[in-house]
Amino acid sequence: MPVPQVAIVGRPNVGKSSLFNWLARRRLAIVDDYAGVTRDRMTTLIELDDRYFELIDTGGMGIVDEDNLTDEVRRQIELAINSADVILFVVDVQTGVMPLDEEVAERLRGVQRPVILVANKADQPHQDVLSQEFHRLGRGHLICVSTTQNRHREKLLELIAERLPESSEEDVEAPRMKLAIVGRRNVGKSTFVNTLAEAERMIVSEVPGTTRDSVDVLFQLDGQTFTAIDTPGLRKRKSQRTDLEFYGMHRAQRSIRRADVVLMFFDAAETISKVDKQLMGYVIENHKPVIFVVNKWDQLHGKITTDRWVHYLRNQFPTLAYAPIAFITGQTGKNVKALLNHATMLFKQSRERVSTGVLNRLIHSAVEAHQPPLYQNRRPKIYYATQVASQPPTIVLMCSEAKAFGNDYHRYLIGVLRDHLPFGEVPIRLYMQKRQRGDEQGSA
Image 1 (cartoon, rainbow, N blue to C red):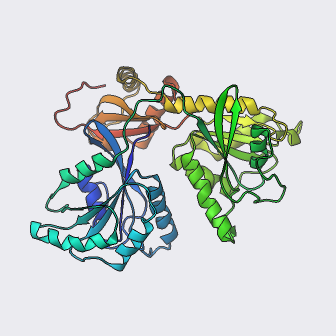
Image 2 (image 1 turned 120 degrees about the vertical axis):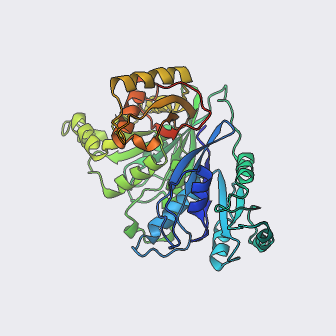
Image 3 (image 1 turned 135 degrees about the vertical axis):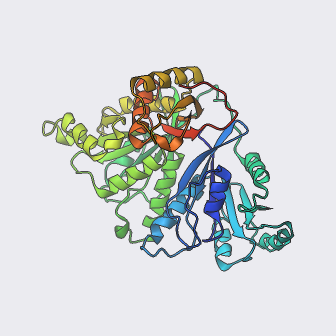
């Protein structure tokens, strides 16, 4: 299963970034009294009772960004809420309930995940009584904390641990794979789903934008049952003229989050657009295995080679050089079975687990072959490696100093992992964590 996620949300200036740094015991997020400092989501991995969870800091809900990034800040907050397993709703004891707190509570009203109401800035025990008015917000178990006075950190971590999803062994019987079929308008997604289902389960039309919602279709292949999620076609945000199109975008994104493997559709006769790149950005953000599917290939028979399209895709998406590419004709079913078999392979890769011994031998060899650059006149060390989750494969490297390993070396290590482990065509999440005192495992 993936690493659970814990999102910190709240209005501006309630101490979300301070809480993030305090729980992580590292100064990672910028802390400032000026509203709107945090814009992007910031994440860090935290170990808790031999388990890991990803802590996510977000911008203040309701802030009007001075650089006209309000929509982007809001989008990052929505991504965090939608992906979270547990939500920390942070409020300020010293200011009491504010109108924006009520707006945040209203946004969380329909969220079906556990919520912990964190009353921050309760620096002294006598201030705890001030927190009682926050009960009227009606969301989550209330706990008073103070990041500056280090009050109740362990108690908050206990509450988080109690609400994290159960860690379970992989099912003996393989679960049904969910395929999200995504792409911009009129690339043949619904026709492809009909071919899979061997029935007119979807409305197929040459009119762009016929599919307005995400629809699940069950189908079988070689005795296995799959779920295909047909999604609305996407187009530029400025072209989204109706509420149906706006919500269609959100349903398409939700389908990507639900999917085990994403099939990213392109029309063989069309060039790649900004919409395609935005959509792929969302797939990358969610660390989903993806296959580039060039559809309607029969229309270009003899006019262009597959090599040219492969080169074109690799140039357009250089960070996805590991992603497979398929050329199909959805209407006739040509190459569709091979595509599904490949999707099944990616699903299996994303669920693979590798022993700590194998990982450590591989990392040891990688470091010997290519030492990390000097950092502050010292050579950083990697002590040991362990896989902490799957879907996507998530690996933690305990090291002497996490920030000593730059992006180039990070990419080098991921390349080694991809080349030598059964994760060749799926995203890999790699965390560098500074080793804590008392950890006696050997160095790589």
